[in-house]
Length: 315
Ligand SMILES: [Zn+2]
Image (cartoon, rainbow, N blue to C red):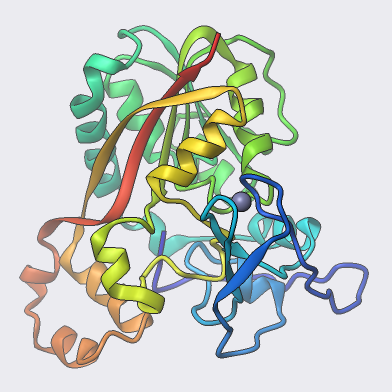
């Protein structure tokens, strides 16, 4: 997600400048790609690239896999550089929209209710940020636990009275088969190895559990029209799934995606305007100046090419 204000620690790995390296397709493992977009700016500070939820535009070389159609960043920085960036993240702007996010998550759960485990089930949210989804899940009747790599956000979730563990999908305290629903809300496009993340999430599920994956979908017609200006093309997004490539990543990880729904989000007009200005939307500053304060506070539901997929373990 995007945010107009953030505080970053700079990240250094052994005091050396990290170098980008070619990576194989995160879905089919082939090294058979063609260039989709070349970078237009060079930014070498991992804190800037990965320290904020939104990241920067135009820094990546995006390629398309000739075998499976997956779009991903290659070459890219080593995993430890990316993780160090995420761990330093402090997102106060992102968090200002917390009540709005809770509302959006709640609505998404209600829309998907008939495919989801019943009230009282144990759910885990991987990469829970400020805990918006945990609050919505609790209100939905779930016993909700979160996992979050950013120390700042772990504290924030706990201050809200939520159960949040510090860690990541690669390193966490949970045991196999202990959840009925495991979710990745806008996370899978950030992790260096999305298939390994799906495999681990599936391992944490009971055999009849459900895996929820919300992701920016590069296969929508809105994304196709936007082309290289697709708003989710940001330094923090290493991968760009479509329904087809997400289904393939799931299939190769032992789960089957069975439902896809558009994800409608509600945020305040003013916050969206700030994000627009940050992303350089034409006339963004002028528009923001002309908007009355009362209007800036209004909730605005919008669809920005995000998709929520549900998957189950293949037996
Ligand atoms: Zn591929």
